[in-house]
Image (cartoon, rainbow, N blue to C red; front, side):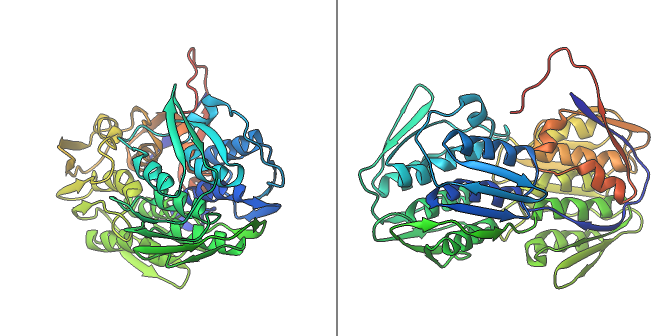
Amino acid sequence: MHILSIHGGSRLTGTVHVPGSKNAALGLLSAVVLARGVTVFENAPDIVDVRLKARLLESFGAKTSWQNATLTVDTSEVVANRIEEEVARSIRTSFFLLGPLLARLGKISLPAPGGCKIGARPVDFHIKGLTALGAQIEYANGFYHACADRLVGADIYLDNPSPGATQHLMATAALASGVTTIHNAAMEPEVLSMADFINQMGGRVEGAGGATITIIGVEALGGTRFRIPSDRIQAGTYLVGGAITGGDVTVEGILPETQTPIVGKLREAGANVEVGHDSVRVQADGRLKAVNIRTMPYPGFPTDMQQPACALLSVSEGTSLVEETIYEGRIGHIQELNRMGAQIALRDRTSIISGVARLQGANVEASDLRAGAALVLAGLVAEGETVIRNVHYIDRGYEKIEATITALGGSIKRVKVEDPSPTLVH
């Protein structure tokens, strides 16, 4: 196994080009099975979750190959194999294959989803939507079994604007007969990327980015070439890295509007932020000020940035309140940050953060992907050495995080150590 060893105290300065979006890529790699032919994904993030998703596609007969940041997927032949249950359960978006494979094959079985343990993430929105499209779904022995003679367009209302359910149902409806309308749809950028991808394959999706999306079903979809947009969460993490270290970091090649909530909070905290046409620059000098944050669906403050933001606020001047409204279990970072000298108390879903002047290096463990990112940020400003275990969580969403931080002037390295009971990727 590996650990990350971080020596704090260095300012992060320089420019970052973040790789493709994890959340967009995983959704697109579910929809790709709708196509018959070869699809080329440019700017594909080389991270654990994407590698696992490609492995799942291969279990259904697809052929995949990597060349630098380009992932090629040939879905000319797709079959309804029973996939490796352990691998499928390791990432939540394996479940997003259910609808597209059903649309392509008429019958499919998939295990219940897994992923980071950050709270309840029910799939009832997905099941209700697929059922409305004509799917017959049964759950038995840990598997969802779905079949449909024919999928037919329908009106679907989501009780909660779930990005995953919105993408899943959009993709499935692309091959359904007739018109599907999704009401109270998620507005995340990844949803818009999914719509663009389906349309490039020959589908017809209208209204993505708004609360109502219309999908006009087509007979068939074909392969295409698609560029995955840059990862907005990685971008936000490195911007916070510049702020927490009193540095000067520019993230380029992004859509700045996806950083609006983060930019707003950084400015409120006292950082200097410059927004360009495809970049954001953050400069900070000394401790920032406390701010209050409430996570919300897009375009609100992203839940995926809540934990990294807590690391920043743990060393900001004053008391901050951070309310997590989406995932009640996204609290694994609190105990570990407190181990480093932070003063964070949890009340219901709100973290009460009393900023301290400095953190101390410690041995800590990442409990999930974004908690791991928070610990990396904390380690960059802590006195002494911080050792982070469970690095596999971080690798799920950050491509070569230590190389990026080293290039910005941080002191971080990956070290292989012996572990008597190796942890499997969750």
